[in-house]
Length: 279
Image (tube, rainbow, N blue to C red; front, side, top):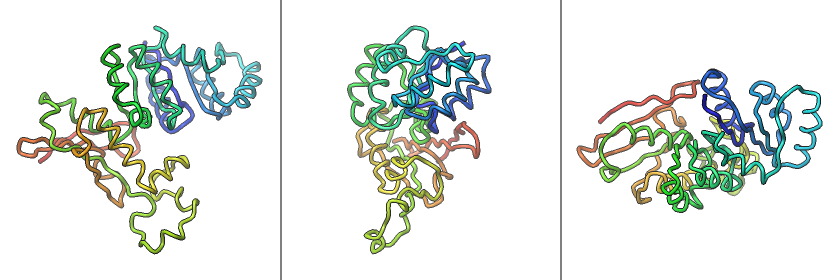
């Protein structure tokens, strides 16, 4: 039985993770659930997974959660930030799912890597601002960092299925939908509203990631993340935009010999990736 800490449990990565765990309760148990402020969904998750510890960053949400906890027969304890960071490091926790959005997730990722955990990384900002440091820390403490966000997970799987060196990689290609303004004419841009920027044509996401997608900033961050995750020069990472979204493929690795590629694609309506080999 593997004990999992899910950081950002009420976000899209966290809820998808718990969906998978719910189908494999004979293999996984939840030690820690952490959320920003969505205490109502967190209560539902606690009823289902009965975690040992819970952390809510928002103090008002934490108070409301604690008030509700008294009427629920659970073994769950609500902890403060200091205890939250320490729990990530304890031997009981085998794997840490790093799904906290933004730079707010860096401290918890650092603690998990420092403790030599298996880190399932969905927090790109940690690697954007501290990729070199986290790589050094991972080597020192024998931590395993596995990206679980679509594009970088696809590339990781492509690379892991080949025996050749990272030096043989000609290019990494990540996909992007182009956001809501990909086909807009330049004269439209001065009239763009915040509401339009958060209205993604394909995905339902939070406001920050939606705006990052609209400005293409998220792809800039993903290039930096890929550079540190895969130890490549940034000019070896390219972005492929498609107005259809990421339906064609999630990540492609093009190798130097014969320019043969490994491709990874996502199945429709599932939480798994499909690997294929192509020229």
